[in-house]
Length: 373
Ligand SMILES: Cc1cc2nc3c(=O)[nH]c(=O)nc-3n(C[C@H](O)[C@H](O)[C@H](O)COP(=O)(O)OP(=O)(O)OC[C@H]3O[C@@H](n4cnc5c(N)ncnc54)[C@H](O)[C@@H]3O)c2cc1C
Image (tube, rainbow, N blue to C red; front, side, top):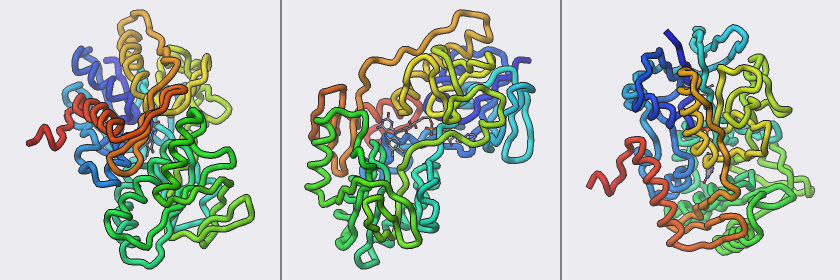
């Protein structure tokens, strides 16, 4: 029997599980995931800010796997041998596959911050971040002059800094402060000047200090490339992504950074029985940035192509739209919209974001407070 291994239950893999549930193929489908839950990163800042319960921001993979007729294995993939069509798992076992669907995401690049030790909190894995965040909040409410440093000026770092400042202010962590460290080129690379301007003005308004310099971890906090240093009680690392190191020995063709190189069908350029979507892969034909938007939209193509490859049908290409919509949460129920050169902000943008996020979660069986009432 044809064995399809789904490695990781990321944003794209959700579409694969849905498609298998709709069209049973009579194959041996296996989902390998370290956790029963897929956390939706788009709602994480809203969870930190207190707008959502944890159960509203995570998708339970167990019922999805069951309706897809997939076996569920709680483990991490720690190696792939694409030549032998085999994956190695963290529990020491190995599984052979006929087809492989990879959606394990990326890791946080901690190479410059590691010396900060215990106070370092990487944003990924998200499950670990969620477990540790309440302790940070508790310490910030009890300690005088608690200083949280968020390193990373991309969308994630900016949203996390806003969420942390908002929750500090509303939960009476009166003496706690937030510093956002972005690289010399500033916040929100890739977004229009109008978006950057709006975000900078809001950071200023909310009392979040923005520093533009390269940060290196030290035992007290971070040393900056401008010669200054910052003490930190906690450093959230929302620094760039890096691919899982175990891909290096997989025999799959990787790009120069180590991501799985795929074509327009999201098929490995070296191994036609391997498909990948989301942060773990890089397109060879176009530049496709790592974002949840692309992981979600490429998911539908991934699902189609995995099934088409099994049935010998034609594959589809993922053609990203020229402009993607990003809605950035800014702490309270307020957000900034970014779409090409267009930008806007306000409570109405948050309402729009909330509607999109909840609609996505609803698709995968997550009830929200309004549904439950
Ligand atoms: C705070 C924050 C806010 C963000 N906001 C936005 C936004 O507004 N818009 C946007 O477009 N992007 C946003 N992003 C980026 C977005 O989260 C990622 O690009 C997206 O999650 C990538 O999806 P993915 O499916 O590739 O990986 P993930 O969502 O990371 O999923 C990977 C899955 O694989 C599992 N896994 C990991 N390693 C293994 C392994 N070895 N074996 C098996 N399973 C494994 C994980 O548990 C996880 O379930 C945000 C990121 C963060 C951190």
